[in-house]
Image 1 (tube, rainbow, N blue to C red):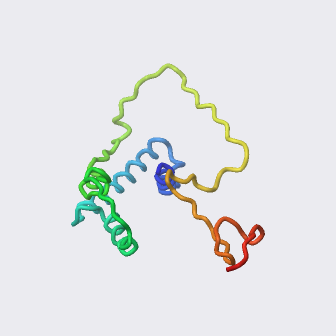
Image 2 (cartoon, rainbow, N blue to C red):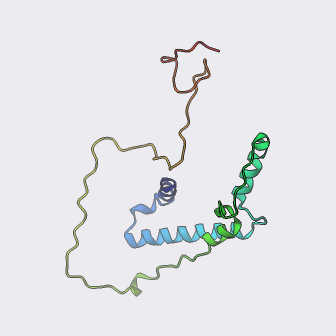
Image 3 (cartoon, one colour):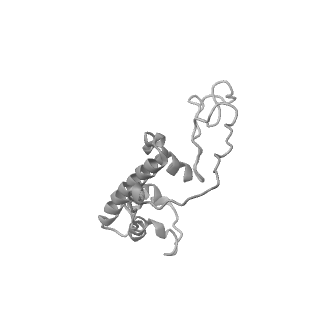
Amino acid sequence: MTTNICESLNSKLKIDRDLPTASLLEAIREFLQWWFYERRKAASCLKSVLSSWAEGLIRKLGDESRSFIVNPVSEVEFQYYYATVLSATYGGLVRPIGNHTDWSVVEVNDNILPLVFRRPAGRPRKRRIPSIGEVSKSSKFSRCKRAGHNIRTCTFEPI
């Protein structure tokens, strides 16, 4: 989950990353404030007990699950799909940081040096790091319809 959040914020703040620290923090605050407002507004419009995502998922999987055997689940499990939990998640406030002239500056006599940073060797990663529980998609070879290999490594007869 962390990589998706980081990638989302990085894509939204691509232009703002080059700004000075105070301006970058202000851009992050504006984005988070807008993000919380949009989600709070969407959560307040919910008519059912479940969130719209959970309702859509239930509708989508309804036809597939007709032949399944259902095991009961207690009410305390999966409570984060409820609309009340969604509303409470985005119920907090993101307050502005104010004008930088009003900030109280603490005088520090110590010189703070930048961190010692060394770029790792080699070409930077281009693929994103998958989230926990995210399953990679396995491709099928089109002739034999089996997964995990290609035309060169296929040992099966075509179906």
